[in-house]
Image (cartoon, rainbow, N blue to C red; front, side, top):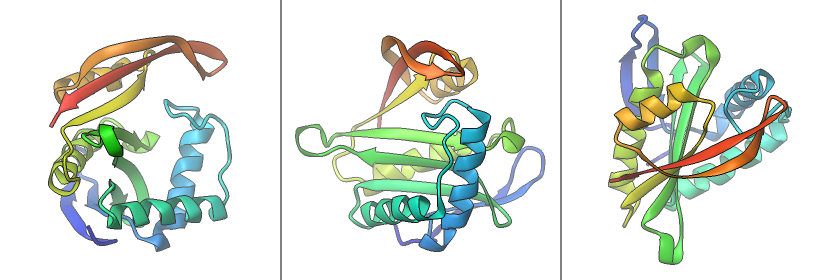
Length: 184
């Protein structure tokens, strides 16, 4: 789990050449562009319209890389050339709940529907099983108004185990936040 380690090289369904690898600190500008594009879109992520600075992104990425080195996080980034097009991670909990990890995934708008999210999820979970000692369960949150993501998660073996009604502000409306899990 060394920064920059290549995990996959190939093409998407639409023929886009891409690689999937662990992030490096020098990727901070690509991560900043990625998160700001998703935030501007007000897609199904918690950052809704917020603009992230390069300093914030460097600090966040630096902490993530430290957690990768300590084997508390697995993070994979998908690149088409120098452009970050998708990112996924599993962050392992600690102490009595260290058997659990929380999963996150996002794909930029222009690359959705090419199979990147599904591939990235599979690879990230496989890496997490190999590298996060004692991991047994992966959980995730999904906006209830995102049926495309929910269907993908179900296809990959995730099951819904709860919902927090009207708890997420998305595009001016409060919607349900659903919780899913998968045993690994």
